Image (cartoon, rainbow, N blue to C red; front, side):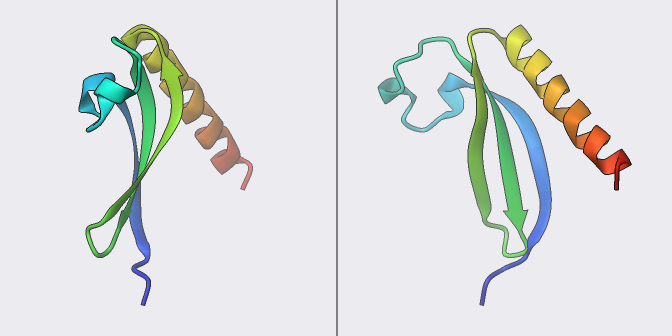
Length: 75
């Protein structure tokens, strides 16, 4: 039986948060990442955007948030 999703999180992560970041090839990158948290406690992770600086990643996160809110308002 599949565990249904409980919530989603959008976060900024530094490249060092990735378990295999030595193989990524980017020394100081930031990522906008989404996590889907299931009732079972497991998480599904997906990188939505890679940026060179935290500031760029923060702006990308704000843009993504605006899109989500805009789509929500249209429902």
